[in-house]
Image 1: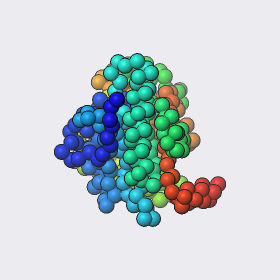
Image 2: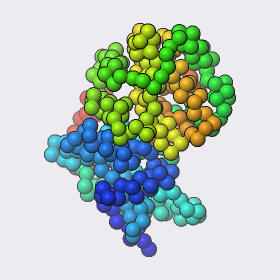
Image 3: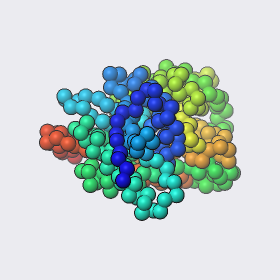
Image 4: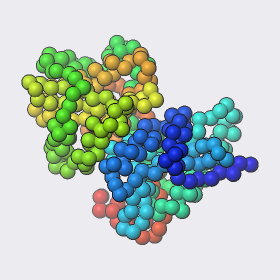
Length: 333
């Protein structure tokens, strides 16, 4: 019987960790050491920690979370602008289904036991395709289903176009007639101002800091993973989308549109341009990274994507934390 050990991944092991993430069916860019650099720069003194589960010298699973202190307690949470964190497992190597299930349960149990010793509170938004969450339920985690939308990029662009709702196709054609200048150029200050305005229209403060925005939209660590698609009109930034690419998946990471151009269809045009450029190429999936806010979900539904469920796992390990969480939930009602 294997003996599993869980510990933090050391900096000299980052290459090995990233190879494991790339090979895992649950691994995303947001589990890598590259994303750790981004988060650490924007959230210091909090840091993104990479926990590895080892069978001897071999990585067989892991967990990623933002390690930060709240009210004197160490917590492990999913940071902002990070659609997926949490647990990932090794790719099955041809074992029988019963053997795979037993192995995954063993690894998840080892990880949850270690996490619960280290963190009194956890809030982890786990990636898609990590579906058997029974070990987390048995370990006392509260699970909440979450949803995202996926577009199949393995189809020809013409077929994807025909799958769009008629209203979306009309919006795209309308935007094409407006004569927007499309490019990969965007001034970060302009981009952030549009994002702030998006939240201001809802009476909310922008939750994304300027440091985090710059780290995602323009900083060096993500240069090889990032694609910016921007639309200008008369020299003015009208709309933009920042996507991040990893392992044949495009992630819809940041987006905003100027209020004066909301009715032009420009945001639909930018999505179509991105999808069209990557269809039937080396990419499998365009991930909208979210289908949980009804108004935004309705917009995304028009592109006829596939609905994908994943799970948020919350752990409240101390009585005071459980009491505080209960009070917060009551206040939100």
